[in-house]
Image 1 (cartoon, rainbow, N blue to C red):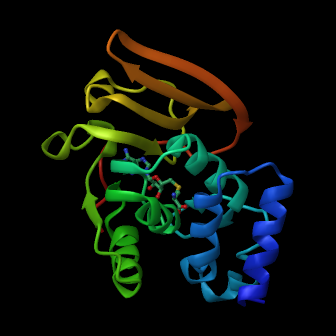
Image 2: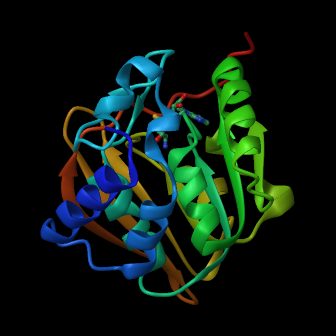
Length: 211
Ligand code: SAH
């Protein structure tokens, strides 16, 4: 149920769902998704569903993770990326396959502690995890070629957008009750926003939880 064959079936399904970026599909074929959920849910890890990961949070479905990765990559390899909402770290591990450097921020301390152990076991040496409020971004590591936020928000703070490199893009779910994937691209004149697929994410919240 958690074998390579199950993963291959997930990739076949993603292709049928119109995910076409081979780099994303290869990364999803190589990272075992079942190790990111509780053992009791491992047999459902490759189904096309979001699953609970404790602390009231969820791991996004394979399709959503693939879709956001494809939008972030937009066909080319990435340099430095900021992820807001590390959660269980599955998206983080994928980003580490096709970006040079990944910074990932999580507001819930105990959730991040578990994820840290898991990602260490995968020996991803281009990932830096940070327990902090991601809405502030990470000015000390900016500018970023891409920013991905894995929780929904109505509004992206200008301090965060300012950390996007010119030519970079940010992908996130925008809204509260009704949400859509949103891509903001920064060019030399400013920011260009596009609204895409309807989605359902947990909200981005401000502040941090220690333990
Ligand atoms: N990509 C993750 C998604 C987890 S759900 C996964 O696949 O597991 C969204 C995550 O964003 C949660 O872990 C939540 O705690 C975190 N989050 C919410 N608001 C945040 C903020 N302001 N800064 C950092 N992380 C935040």
